[in-house]
Length: 432
Image 1 (cartoon, rainbow, N blue to C red):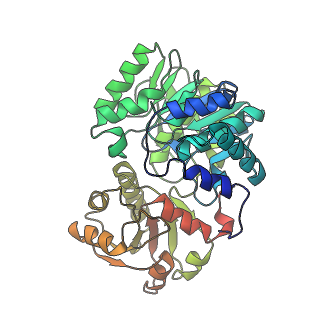
Image 2 (image 1 turned 180 degrees about the vertical axis):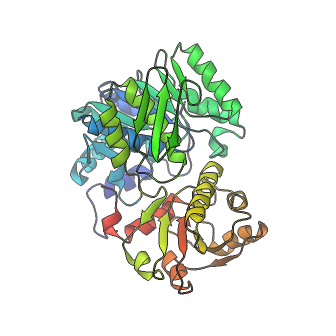
Image 3 (image 1 turned 90 degrees about the horizontal axis):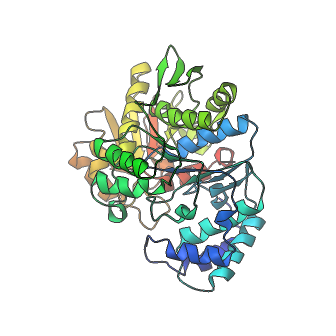
């Protein structure tokens, strides 16, 4: 990462100080500041609003690639960022410039007039302001946390609502059971707006169906109204109106077939051609989601003929997807397997490691640049509880330098903060 002071650093730091202590879910502050800004949320291009526990970013990345292959100018809002804050806001296909970001943040700060405002609310208001001022054909809008009280949920009439797989995460804010969590996620459903839902646990499926019925919304559920699967090295998509033979997603992992299904259904509802959908599947990128790293100091430090993978998955659903991908890689080309792992202290480390029980692997626990990091020795103790062999290191580079000189498969995983630190080591891998 660069050490120079960026134009938006000062307003970001001042905005952080307004509401620094904890997440506080409500729409009142967001509505207030956006009213003072002239209601930018009412001057947006057509919106696809995306909520869920896992797969939001990948689904969005796939849909963005399809939309751009269709020739559309696409705004994008995602969080968190990996290396640069500007990754969160894409204007008509291009990351927001430092100067423009500083300008919209400054206007949010002035409109807020020193009143309480969370960091995410401030940056979302800034994004809405930028989106309202730059012409585009579509806005892909990812929720930050939950749905019903998420700062993004002040929009009124989305074109489509997408709900990706719902699972346990952020229970302190969203609830301790899937029904309660699903009610939060389903809060993005608006009257009359088509809803596309991933395969869901029964409790979540019931909640989404009830919300769609109450809002008189067309509901398209994976495995029922549409589906996608791999066949002979191709992706087959089928719904009531179409049967498409398509390329497999460029994104790695069997779970990306499910994310692609959501994106394809949305693309069809938006009127995209099969050719644009296919080109989008082939071109979509989403860093730190089962990303194969092929350059940089960590790759250079690996034993010859080794592989290095990076994934920011950090909850039970993500851990299951990680294990499935690992098993597929090992079945195709067995190599000694090594995990380099770091987690933040809001995650259940023992539960995370439990998804890797029974695999033949070694683990090195590391720290990263977050105040909430679990100390590596505590993380290793959680791995030991699950019968896994774990050691500690000060960094991923040290962990790799300790490896025996034989070809192996290394996966760095557990936190997007850790993934950001890894990507920051190699500017060529930064999101653009």
